[in-house]
Image 1: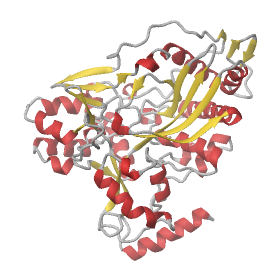
Image 2: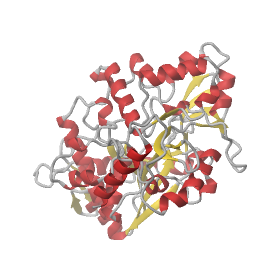
Image 3: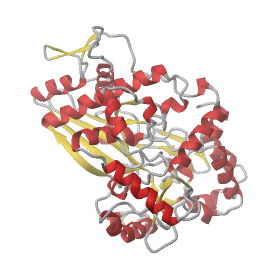
Image 4: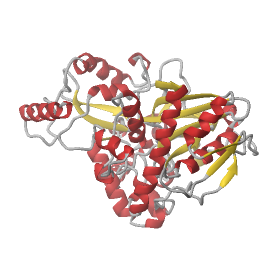
Length: 464
């Protein structure tokens, strides 16, 4: 993925132009249309941005060769208005782009290995916290791109002070997650005279020793560009076509992709750490230390909060997911991008946790292929129950689109056109089954009446 050919194919959706400014309390964010209008005058800019921008995002969004070609044409033609909702792919279209990108790449060494870096030989070890190590510098996660642009994240000074402990705790939890229940070869961690062999057991021991363990199901807008221009944040979401009609229009609803993660926050006399858990474009479902500060426009909302036994149950299931994904990728080493999209995007494993804890999921989009989850294990059963958005003829439930948003109040959204569309449709979408008729001709169904009949059949079948 780091080779030059791979970078050309993997230009990501950080290149979305959003002409609408943020609300007045967020004056620092720039619409990318303004940045592109300035930089496109430089003949070296387009080539540079298509090979260097966005190849290490947190949550994915891969463009295939067709989208990259269209993107370059629009930039070179200075047709910035046409990029206002770029790329506006459907979920199935995104899947096709991922497949084509993988086919063009066609270099197994360029993609993640299919085996998480956390896999190690079993061993007994001390917890090792407080951990040694200096806090990352302010610019440690920023890469200059030239032209006044930088890519990456700013270091959060508060999180950075706890980064060493967070990195060690994430490493320990990932290692313990790989302990199979029926395998005698187990890694174990020693803490306070106890020998512990699972993530939930370790966090339970920390709680018993006076630590507070807080788990939060958090949603954000995914930032696929992570761009900063002349010191100012740049709006770089990735828009998906939901194929749901906007009431009173001949358009379908476009939404920025949401990113979700379960955040594990530990505070106490020994361990003070901040972690996040999700499946990323790096092909790893794992616990990760938190150290950077999000740009303000990605917003942020906690959908569910877990404490006590519920928090430990979420961590237990997260460990089972780490182990299940590791096993799948061991049997499918040829999956492009470490299984991203085929095994889900960032939302899928968090949707499994929400489904287990709440009885339903409110996340969109969900893309995993059930063929990779054919077994009777807990994770396979949860995967088989997810309402997938990559299936033909099954439109998303609007309640999941609303539930995935990183705001409780639509008026807080930094995209005025999106705000208007959601306000227009929310009452209709939440009062009955998802609408299916009156779609543009780009959808596969030939008539609006056929869309209604087939869509209602699928909805009733799913609910049954």
